[in-house]
Image (cartoon, rainbow, N blue to C red; front, side):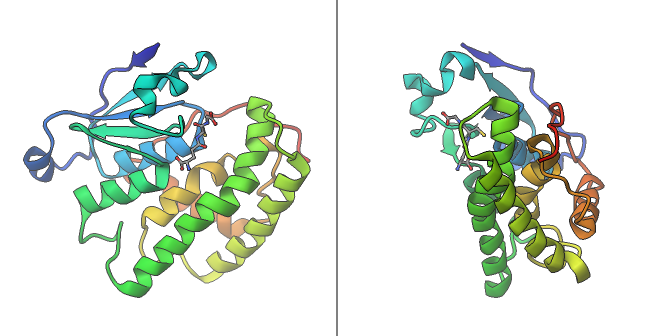
Length: 229
Ligand SMILES: N[C@@H](CCC(=O)N[C@@H](CS)C(=O)NCC(=O)O)C(=O)O
């Protein structure tokens, strides 16, 4: 039911810090087509952390099996197991990884205003991104019963605000890349698969390219692009 894939040891792994803290790769329970899972994988890759993707056979309910529910009580991917510490929820995973392996860096700022801005964008990822570009893609790629037209409208409402926000700045929360940018990337980069065109948003497209240019960046496999709504 659970298919472990061989561990990925990222090329930009910083040995000094990892040797102190890690004895085995972090297990990432995932579905390779899930943007929430890609969000977690991107963070692992950016931090250069060794990880072992474990692809769940979701078509056959592996994510609702008792052993997996102990790790992720709502039966959702992604989840991680870091040396016996298990954690579900993509944004919680980003927060944990940044505090555990990159504290004091640009990824997770401690200044109160910067930290609040990071949290604001994590909330936008869990709310507006989830109900907008993510939901639209769920309909087109996975055939779910979400209201596609409503999701597309929400996506454009969000993208208008984001594009204006990014007009004179490189990153969402601070003047350096943070976990907020990682949380935002996957579903926005793959919005066209849900029938949401990004052509009208040059600042968002430039921001996506900046993320793709970061050391360690890994791509999520593309799904066929839906007819544009
Ligand atoms: N808040 C969760 C949402 C995760 C989520 O919705 N995962 C989807 C895949 S993208 C899932 O596991 N769906 C299975 C189900 O709904 O049963 C997170 O950020 O990790």
